[in-house]
Image (tube, rainbow, N blue to C red):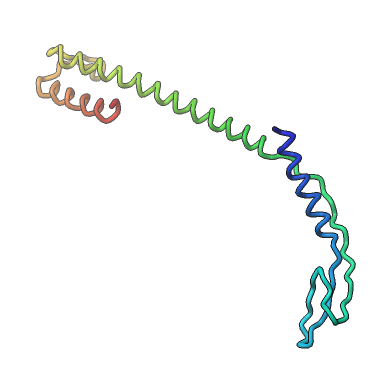
Length: 141
């Protein structure tokens, strides 16, 4: 398969080189317009132009494989980043669900403030439950 991919451009290059080496004629029509053509005009003098052989160059090295490798490396990096973000999101969601279960099942919730523990009032507990549920709805679904 790789051989065919290299052979096709080389064949086209060889064909185009032979086509460019054809004889070209130059003449001026009665209106003074200069013409160039592969065939001389009938009944008019024409000057045969020497066509130079085009400079043959080696085909450019295939850059596509490098580009593909670079793209694959970028894709792999992005996939790793997405997987890491997804793992963090799952961990966060699990922690939030645990917090919600504790808030709902334990009416005597305490929090540490400045090194001292204080108990939530029922309103604070319900507000915290609503916040955690909203966070779960926005992030975990």
